[in-house]
Picture 1 (cartoon, rainbow, N blue to C red):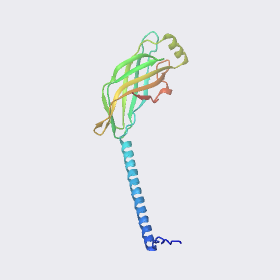
Picture 2 (cartoon, one colour):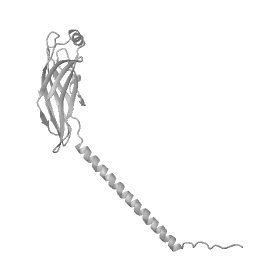
Picture 3 (cartoon, rainbow, N blue to C red):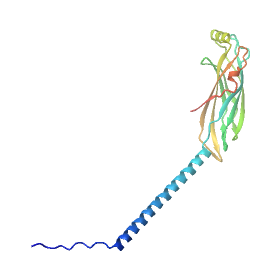
Picture 4 (cartoon, helix red, strand yellow):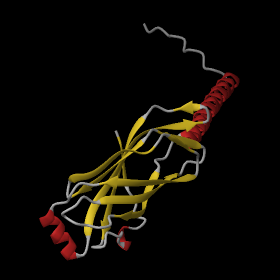
Length: 206
């Protein structure tokens, strides 16, 4: 004898339409909220990126304007004089410099040193400062100098060292040890060769 089980009531078309409308509204609301939060995140990211660009300091730029080593002679010490341009490319950021020390190297050996070419100074934004200096050098290697004079060019490396900090509005960054290296070449008369004029120097931070 078989028993008959009543079938479950089927949802009416009205209830089905109401459920679908509610599901559609919930989905749309969730999508709108997600889109809104994504927009906020994107806007915040753009604002932070713009702020970072506005306060992110760019390195100063150094170029050799002039360099001379008159009276090149292996028998006597050589006096070096130079002019290096120091450019602050930042629009709203100034730079504080401690005293700038200068060294001259010949074939890897230091032949001149001055502990304070320039005293401490402040460089405003978008400013170019001339660093003028004179360094008394030791005698050069006669054999190596004779070879270089014969070739028509004598290479030196000018190095500048200082400690700097950037000024953003009224806020100062921590100190950076700055090392600038400029490779230059002079002729037998000690005058800077044209190939080295306005040559950009390498910059390192420690």
